[in-house]
Length: 468
Image (cartoon, rainbow, N blue to C red; front, side):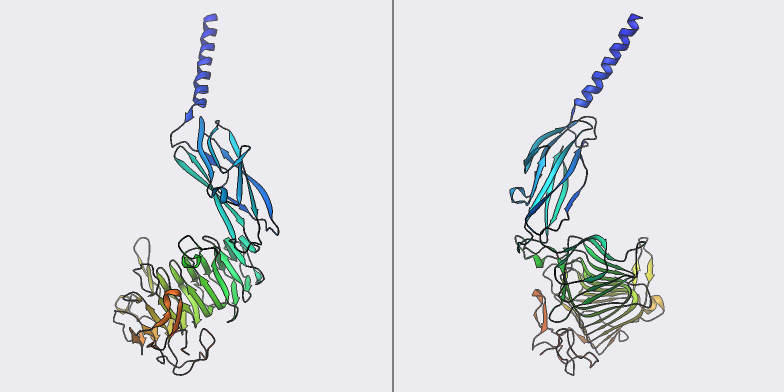
């Protein structure tokens, strides 16, 4: 009996020693990492004076052995408006922190901002970087830098006034699938809307009315206002997602500018009775396309779809569209192998099926299609041989820069490869000069003025600007 007891005790001791040693091992393989309680810390208090607030996160060790964090650091160091405290110690760099298995450490974060500082960005950002066994974890820190209206992943409606900027963080949705629809958002003249990275103004089965005027247009752009090290802040495309209509109710955008987004204006309609009206709208410097329509009902007059890293415009897969006195011109300095303008009446599925989506109507009158590529106009349609019907599109009295032959049933009295001679297209200035060959080439229409409210004189000039 005594021998059995001794054996049991010995086994117990060995087990205890085995697991105890295992738990006291320092885990150095990259398969072992820490867990952080959150990946983004958002300070959403609107400061009115110099102030500070404190938030905390936890860093966990969910492994069976000791984890050693080789370094925790605040990315912008002493220049950051944020301050961090790791396990009771303040600083910007912390080295060799050990966490026992099943244990955790607290990290406290503070921020001090003077929102009245005119040079501050709208959103101040920094990161906490964790380095563990060659693994990198990041926690993004965001805080408001100036006094503004902040829309953080919310349903919006009513009126956006122009007394302060409006900042979109995530999604500002005028209606949202399975949540709400049939809403309306009206944006007053002179209002400035700023989108954070990937932020979007999303309109779902609702309406948007943008009421800018020539003196006080509505401006949509990124939230970064300070320049980059080598580039002006306004020169970088793709800094936010853009304005996105999905099956909208009747909407109108007048005297507005949309800059530096991924897709400036995306309109997916797929309905019969509603349309989006665009009047004197400028869209520039998008990463993918300034305007993208898919099965949409759009009427646009005196609009500029300018420089883009890829397309000035993609008008695609059906709907009813009417563009009159619009300029599609891409003189972006970035390399691109895309035309400024693409018209398409089909798409290809993931399993390589071709789906034909004809337009109910597609009319382009007195429009310019131009750019710094060899060919900046592409009409990519399936055609009569494939579908048995002619493409339902007409380009009437337009200036087309293209090397392709355009069938007569698609174009009427168009001009090919004219010298447009814009004033300074690389800097987004698309007004005509006196040497432009599109002057007096347009068809007389019911459009009595141009994008700058200047009177049009017959015979009209082609494009959104009338030469004065």
